[in-house]
Length: 395
Image (tube, rainbow, N blue to C red; front, side):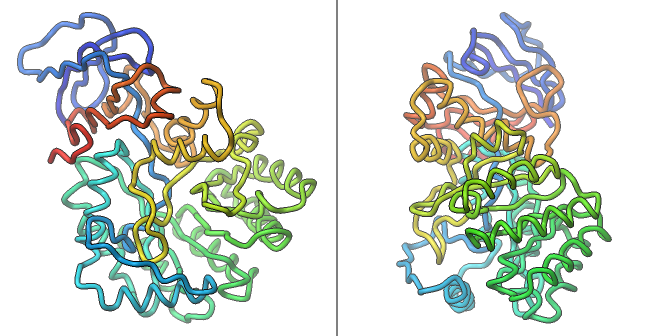
């Protein structure tokens, strides 16, 4: 924790002000704040100050960011893609810690100061990926918060022993139990979900489930997730990532499901994928469903695209959903900032007195314009400490 005075900045693109951070928290916001001896001063140059971005879904253990170009082989099915990735990762000359650290630093440089990452757990990987990501975090934890999801990417019911390893992961640094396509991967939707909710309930963990399955099947599984969320008293502690079924399911069924999600407090994360229908994010938000955008797979064995820039992801949402007015563009920005922190239940986030002393400075005219132009991040501050300058890691 450090002290810092930022002068001549525009909080949320409003009037120019100074922001004083003391002991890692915002102590004052106002014009011409006194310059106390010993407090470093950064002249903001009339840049816009916003609360940091939240990277709510990424895979730090899979990443190839910062390494030589890897040409993508696209197998014909999800199962084949999973198996292809396992084979490639067996022979990578770079450790999980090295690769994860590369992306953590990149995310911080782009303005994200909190990451939720899924890490693969299996009887083959055991807890090695978890330990590798935690090793990387030891060198970056001053700059970024981290929560880890124990993720059964290769299957859980079809890989006996994985459930026990996922439970062990909670004891060794993970805080969220993951799941994936209960029908197509494990072939047992009820068994898969029962196992996940049992572990989470006993360990006091949250849940974050990958649900790629679309249409009526995906909506059926969302219903199973909602039933278990309510039965286990886990309202507000469950997230479904991707949820393509909300983008391609029958409209009346989707409409009913959105009401159920709002009632049970189940959140939705979307990476705004290429040609795949994705959930109606603004409609979800309007109807009380917590939701946010995130990067998901980027620069790995699945996907060559992406750079850990959540502002770019907000722009992609705006582009894909035809946002044109200023209000619409700002709503897209909220999906990577304010709504991300609400979704992950992060506290003390914002630019008000008493909030965590973390923020991003971006040179621009207003919030709508920075979504469209995606300017370089001039400064990133975490708990009063400068951690990135001009789009580059500073520590």
